[in-house]
Length: 116
Image (tube, rainbow, N blue to C red; front, side):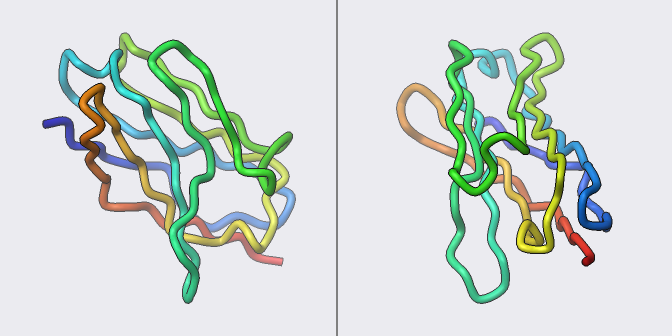
């Protein structure tokens, strides 16, 4: 199993930037679809962005043009670069690792707080 570990969350002012990292040890990393999800208080967890093993990406409409997902297979790490942050981006951000058999594993989450 691949266990994702997130890092990089924190407190930032509106308009600022943060980069989240998700490390997932294991030689199978390059075959995984890596996703970032978020959950705000009182709301359901939602997909923010994901990236397939082939590099295809998709984004939630609310973050298009502001967030960029990427991966470095040599480092077994996926990233979420967040720019032009808004208070409504405040949430716990979770990393998800989905394998070819459609089994997935979740990280423990990292808090992102955007102050107005």
